[in-house]
Image (cartoon, rainbow, N blue to C red; front, side, top):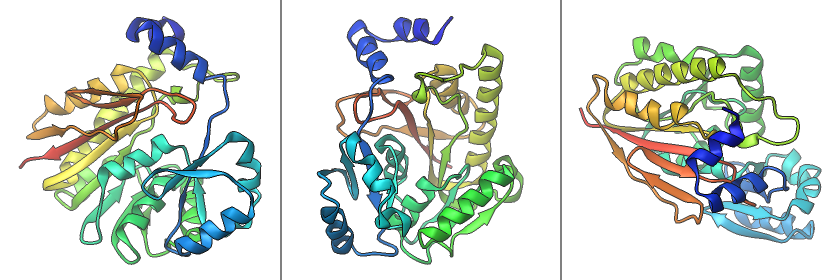
Length: 288
C-alpha cells in the first residue's frame, strides 16, 4: 500500500485533503528563544530590527511567515545562538515532558539537539540533564549545537540508548524519547519512501528503546515518546506493546488545544497544516 493510500484509509476525506495539500506548501517558520545566553528583551529587540512579523505560538515559541526564513537563518541572532529554528510540533515533546531544575532528565536520541536545548532552557543552567546519540557524526553535531547555545554543562554520551536498561535502571525522573522513525512528516517532492521491511525494522527498534526508557525510569516518573510519522506500527502499536509489557504504566492524556489534534487512548496525534509537521506524542507514567 502506498503512503497516499494509507492516509486515505486512516483519515476522513476532509482531513486527508488538508494533510495531503500541506506536504506541497511552505510552512510557517518556528523558533524558540534561548534564554540561557540572552534575555528575552534583547532577542525581541533584535527580531524587531529584522522587520520580521512574529507571534507567540506556544510558551517561549514563535512563528513567522515562510518569507522571513532567510532573514532569520542569516541573522546574528541565529549565528550567536539566541534563537533555535524548529517546527512547533517538535517543541511539543519538550513541553509535554515539562521538566524543572530538580528533575534528573535524559534525552535518549538527541541529535541535532533542538529538544535538548529546549529542555535545558526549561530546567535552567546547571540542571541534571544527560543526552545520548549513537551515531558518531550526529553526536558531534549535537555537541556543537549544545556548545553554541550555552549548554556546555549538559552530559553527553555517544552510546546506543538501549544500553540504559542495563546501566541506568531507575535513574531518571523524566525521559524524552524522540525515536528514530520513518519521518513521513517530511513527505513531499524528493522524499524517498521506506519499504514495509524497513518500517517493520524501525518499529522493532522503537519498541526496544521505549522498553529501555521504562527500565531507566524511576517509579512515578514519566517518559514522553514521540515520532514525526503517521504509521500506527511506529506510534500506537509501540505504546500498546509497552502497555502489554512487564511495566506498570499509565498513559497520561495530553492536549495543547491545537486545531489539528487527535487524542486517543494511546497518545496525541498532530496532523500537519500550514504551521505544524505531523507528530505523535505519548506521555507514559511509570506507576511502580
